[in-house]
Amino acid sequence: MAFSPDDTIAAIATPPGRGGIGVVRISGPHAAHIAGILVAPQRELRPRVATFTRLTAACNVPGAAGPSRLNDEVVVTFFPAPRSYTGQDVVEISAHGSPVVLHTIVGSALAAGARLARPGEFTLRAFLNGKRDLIQAEAVGDLIDAATPLQAQVACDQLDGTLTRRIAGIDATLFDLIARLEASLDFPDEGYHFIDPCETQRQLQSTIEGIETVLTDAARGRMIREGATVVIAGRPNVGKSSVFNRLVGADRAIVNENPGTTRDLITEQVDICGVAVTLVDTAGSRDTLDAIEREGVDRAASAANVADLVIVLLDGSEPPTRDDERLLERTRDLRRLVIENKSDRVHDTPAVNITADLRVSAATGEGIEELRRTIATALTGEERLRDTIAISNARHIGLLTAARDDLLRAHAAAGERTPEEFILIDLQAARSKLDEIVGARTSDDVLTHIFERFCIGK
Image (cartoon, rainbow, N blue to C red; front, side):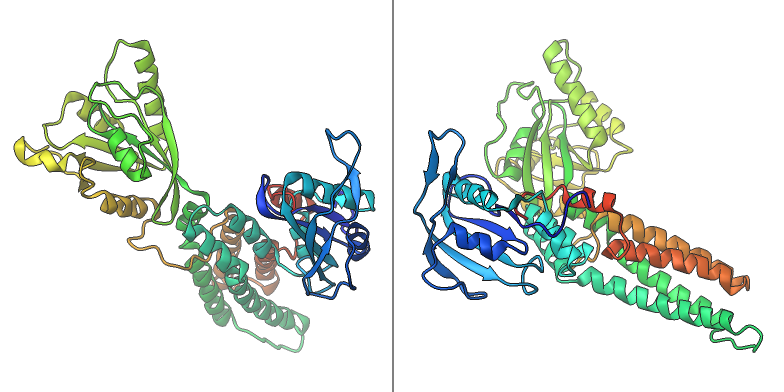
């Protein structure tokens, strides 16, 4: 790595801003010594026991006239190696959550010999010291970033080792197969064959099926992990902003009976059945001479073209117009839902002669919950989202897909009675990709890319 993993590092481990409690984490061989300089414990710090004490150190705080000394009450907990988050000596200092207090503690730790931790460096050390594999380390970042309960559940499952165990099972089968093929190569003159081609094919087929079972969840898992963009499109006055507000649960967009009220994209982050959705309200789709409204219509069309899902909203209380028909034609090849609004008024006027996926009423709320479920199903392909999703990370998906392709080549070679040494090349290539998933073989560049997106302090 570009820096030593054996330095003593320190950082604020809680989010920026003010709070009741803030935590400063120190990790490394001198963590306990540095903590002893910062605080005045009434007794020696005992492992994994919270000790109530006070700050004694002072440091220069930006903007202050001179050295700042705070006599804050703190709770200090010492986790000696290797039974700690990083596998090193770790001290966590819990103080009042004022930025001044927390920065004073960090500044004092740096003055006492610590180095400011880089983003994700505590979790990186946990990985390097064998406390987490790479899948679990990435799950820590996913759990921090989780915006919906389902995202948190997927991250917790991976942190608990769900995917790690499945990868380990696949790897164990390949290891056994490789060992038997290599044993056959070691005794060619004696005529020993530890596995015949038919058995090789059978085991490879079983392993390929196991990988494909995991990959079945891939698109759904990525959608849950990364979220989706859903655009509400329609001509003016069909109720786009009203449906948008219903899905958001607040009056986020202006609703007015005058056409052209919405002239720009309005976005909001919402949780729809566990999927983190960026919901986009758009300008009404119609021909217009107003330059500003025309720009809004063009932006709406561009947003629809790149969205994960388009909701084409129609007015169910009247026949379709030419603007409706043009929008339906333009979105025909996109992933979309055709929704009729104003179901509470449909009995008074002719019904739309277009097959809609669902009818709702933004005015009364009728059908809105069903619309949420329909959106989630359209995005994930599942009527009901299962609690456990094995795979959701694009890096894992790409490597597992490549490993499956290696095994498919090996399977074809075994069927053609290709010599064992050629089959072994593909099997070893597949194993190396499995190793890269869990971090057994991973370059420094990959590790830097993974951990640099973490927040400082984690």
